[in-house]
Length: 371
Image 1 (cartoon, rainbow, N blue to C red):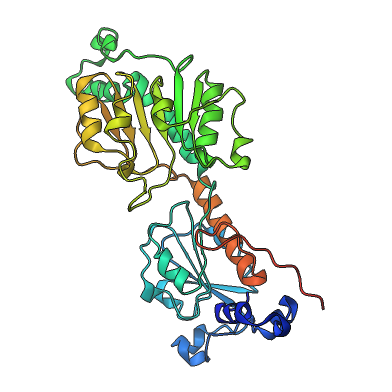
Image 2: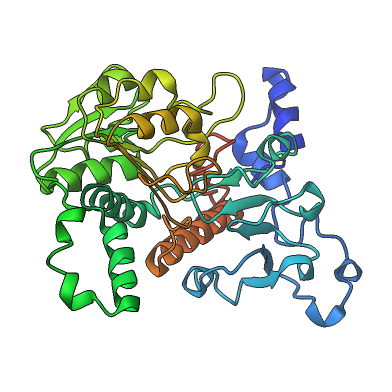
């Protein structure tokens, strides 16, 4: 990677004296040791590994992901034990600027969101921040489909009822008599509105169609890559309101963006007021996307449902709400996939300067230098 200061200097040179990219790459010191200082900065000479990239980790990172770093080229240390790290790899740890060593060249989060990383400050420092889009898509999609069933059949209420009957010794006597209390509906021939057609949204739309659902989608930023993954029968709406107004189920799959023009409370009174009276809202994206007050009014007035894996201080005990722990990406497979993608991304950047899946830098791929 060409250091930021050198890159800026290149842009300001007159064309007549501007060096070629190839010559700059030979001028720039991009070796493992560049910028790390002497071994004394490690604090412990026994941990000094000259000639190796050092990776600082936070949280429990999947061993399968960490195995992407060959031990002959990389050393992995947890937290503050990594005093001269080249890169930071983390999951949910809320990263502070003082935890980013002066030697850090990249940060990667094992997951799609980067709200726990000071992205704006890292951009100012010239440090790319990477995420792992799509790595947990299958895990979240499966939970969304499970949420559709939870919102259709009152399964949770039925389980709790059977536990109560078991405590009273009445399970066998009442099991047939009480089943009418938990009647529901099937997914087949129902309409699912998918708000956000990224990796998770596209996968949800595709598999829900296989269950017999009609799919309506909305995504003003739909990429060609994800458009090709959508079922051919999908109907694309021109607004969230038009997408949800005839839907039996609504799945939110959009990022949470703070500030003016962001997505805080985007599922608000206007949108919720367009729901069918028995619609099921599935929120496995971010809790802050939904206006809780408007959602409570909807749940109080009809037979709708709210299914989410985010806490809600207002809706947590509503009879038509099912709130789960934040389980969306909590599978061994998703954690392995996210960690492996993050590690691969860091390796590509440190070893070749390639930038992909960065939230604050454009994608870049540099050709190999001639010998």
